[in-house]
Length: 238
Image (cartoon, rainbow, N blue to C red; front, side, top):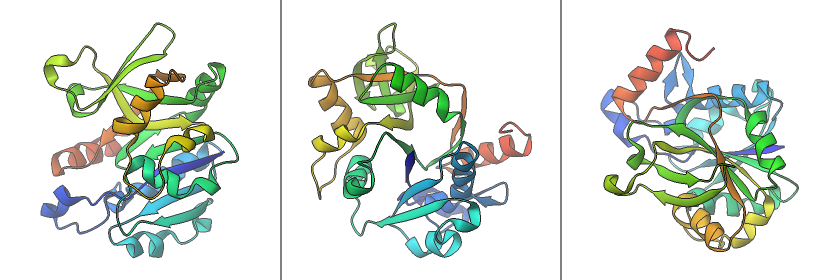
């Protein structure tokens, strides 16, 4: 199985710390966030990774190379202009047509067992499965409503807080079938939350969601990065 790590984030809000880096290169526990991701996938037997690049791409490629030093194989996709979360995947469509794959937003520090999510996805013959996590501010992400079997009935990206009926939101981890790539237009900005999932639901295609046991922490602000660093030092990610 392959995984696509979305790594084009700019890390703009972290520049106040003097960190002029792609977001995935922000250090946690003495190593870049992206290195944590590579280790997570490698431990679980996923060794073929695609990483998209945008801001200061050489900071990533110079450090990680082809991934062999980290026990994985990395294919890079450089985006001079950002294509969005789904547009980025579409650009690498030929590399993803050979089977089910994982999409992983690289902005978060994560510990999760992918096997649980993949087994859930396959058992339900889903076109797409979304990992969920409980958030104290669900309106800041993609909010999903599901039935008792986990089938998604509604997906709203960053809704009005008054319209939120659940605290479960997208964790930025998806299991996707190659057939989903057909509905993503090539060469233009396209987003999973705003475009792909609503379209799948409108067509009646099976989209599911589940809440795996996981640690998920956004590191996009100095305050959140400090919390992630604290959690790491306290051994909460082990």
